[in-house]
Length: 57
View (spheres, rainbow, N blue to C red):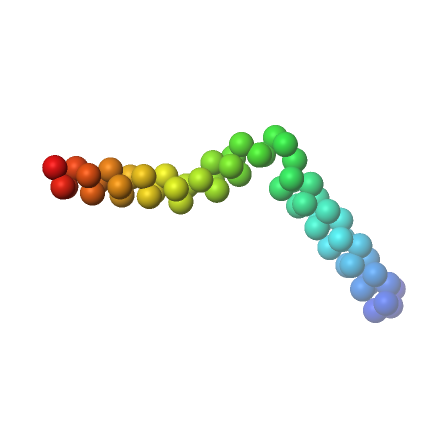
């Protein structure tokens, strides 16, 4: 096997891996977990606001 063949095989492997990761990320079964992770920032802000209200009282 020469260098061109090895490079081609590596390119195909990387492409298949990329397609697999894209499928995993956009599949509907993982949507709930990603939505929860995306909203973690807002949950933290709500906790800070609650703490400020408790301190002001």
